[in-house]
Every structure is written in C-alpha cells, then in structure tokens.
Length: 241
Figure 1: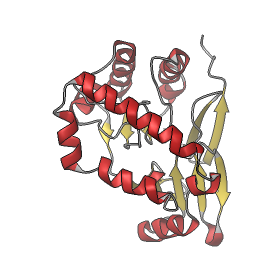
Figure 2: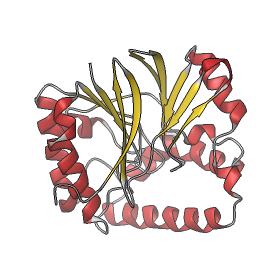
Figure 3: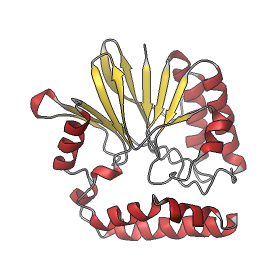
C-alpha cells in the first residue's frame, strides 16, 4: 500500500506552472499510489462548484481520470476552498473528508487536518473561520451571482494579506496545546497537516510525530507513506515541462 499526501497548491490563473506541475504529478508519481489525500487549499480560491474557470478544467479532468483508474482520492477543505461541495465530488470522483479524519497507515493510525483550526493563538482568524464555515453564511454567498462572489473572494484575500503582514509569525503557527489535545482526542501518535507552509517532521513527547506538508511555490512537496514508513519529499515543479 502506497499513500500520498499533498496540500496548499493554491492553484490559480496567475500561476499556470502550478497547474502544470499538478497535472504532471497526477500522470506520473500519483499513478503508483493506491490513495491520494489532498489536505486543503488545492485552489487559491473556490467560489462554488457552479463556477469552474477554464484554466482549472484540466485539473477536474485529471482528478477524474486518476480516480477512475482505481486510485482513491480524498479531499479536506482548506481555508481557501471551503466552498467545494457535492458537485465537485461528482465531477472528479474525489471523496470529501471531515475537518479531522483518522486513517490507518502501516506505522499506525494518523490524524489528518488542514491545520488552520490548530492556529488557536490567532483569535481574529478563528473568529473569521467560524463565520466562513457557517452553513448559513455559505448558503447566502452561494446564492449570489458569480461576479459578486469573485469580488468577495478578492476582498477576503486582500484583507487576509493585510492582517497577516501585521501579525507575529508565531501567532500564525499551530498552538502546541491544540496539537496535543487534537492527538489525544483522536488517540493518534501521528498528525499530518498543511496550512502553515512550514514543511517539517516534528518529534513530540511520547513518541508522537507531527508532519507538516509543504506548499507548492518555489518547489513542490508530498508525503510518501508506505509499509516502510513516511517520507517528506521536495521536488522540482518544472519536472515534466
């Protein structure tokens, strides 16, 4: 059994190299895995399943092709693509996961999260996250015309960039107590997440580990889990170009 994990690709029109890299990844590395987990922020923004930009249509088709080939693909919502819904899963064959999911690995059960819910020191963000994940708020947004949703996504992105610039770095990282509690609640010694863009393997007390997936920007990242264990791998985004 070979399982791959990726997150934080932030695909958008302004970075066609990222889309090309994912398409190559799906047609090469991912052909050799049994399962692929996407732990959030696959897209820079997602305003609803009824609006798929032309430049992202190849991604939809590639995910469908890979899932139809026998590879199980799973997706967790991130803080950029939390409006991905049922139609997306129908178009791609991807299965959606809850915000916290436990899966079996050869090394033992692993807790999967996007990771933003662990940044509990960022009180302003957690308050906004609660609003954005509200079914009532999402229903109201999805009822708006696409141009208005696009404008709202741009507005939220600009506000996020402004607020992030004014925050201390440690506030935007995960809170150790939140990590410990999440792992205790899930009864897992391994936590895999993204969001923070700080790829690393952290060895915690009590034989626990926290593996942070890297974002796709200057290079690409994936976690490769086999019967021999887990390996965090960095690769050149220009491979296959």
